[in-house]
Image (cartoon, rainbow over all chains, first blue to last red; front, side):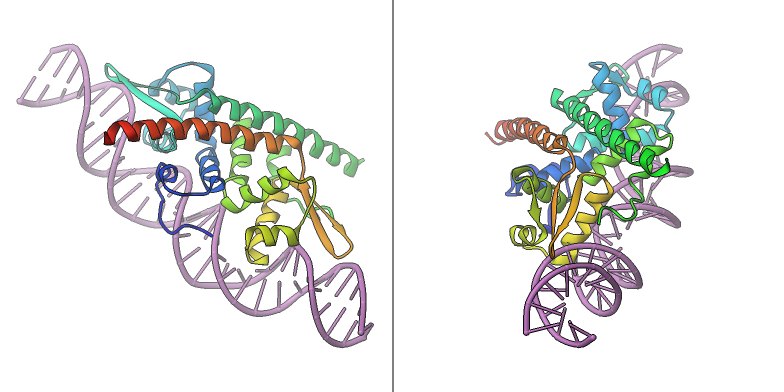
Length: 122
Length: 122
DNA sequence: TCATGGCTTTACATTTCCATCATATCGCGG
DNA sequence: CCGCGATATGATGGAAATGTAAAGCCATGA
């Protein structure tokens, strides 16, 4: 089932990968707290400098940079250099939609699991 | 047979995990081709037996079962035993929404990268 | 109750991912 | 041209996810 080739996220697009593989790959790009955090910040402001992201998240520069690289390879963000700083933005507004829907789902899951917890401990 | 011990991923709910960690954890649950495939099948029919999933995917039973366990732990699906078979269904309709939005995003990404490819090779 | 089909869990080797540190590049002021 | 602030890329050890195979339930029917 797994394709031996194509470890580069962008290569999932050209060749004949079934859609569910491409989708899974997309979710993999979103499956890290730092990356979600960055995308949330970028969802709020149209364009954010790396320095601001550093301040917001309190991460080490190289650590953040690595995750930004992942987001870039997954085509979720774009980077633009202005003067000596680099500004990131969401590559597509649908990225923010994905986070919104995820949040909606989580609210429901949380409500249900909380209810189950209450029922169990009462 | 409802989830004897819901351990790892659900522990993200009770304690004070920031939302972006919970979200990342959700996406991690979706970040495998087999699991996406299963969720797609479950999005199409309200309830599907494991045997049908096996037939649809062509996977080995234990392999599929492992991924079903992951989906259960992430509270994305629920399992119900009827007679000798086990039927799965989406735990929330929002799970299907997530796949829909992901697809919409991918369509856009694909269109853009394809356009860039065309521009580069012409 | 024993055997069998249907599904799950366990165990373990392997691949992949992640955090940390070191090193390299890019733009700009001096 | 040189150094400096701002980012990016490499390399490495360790943790987590994955695939494979074997063994373990649970229900049903002989």
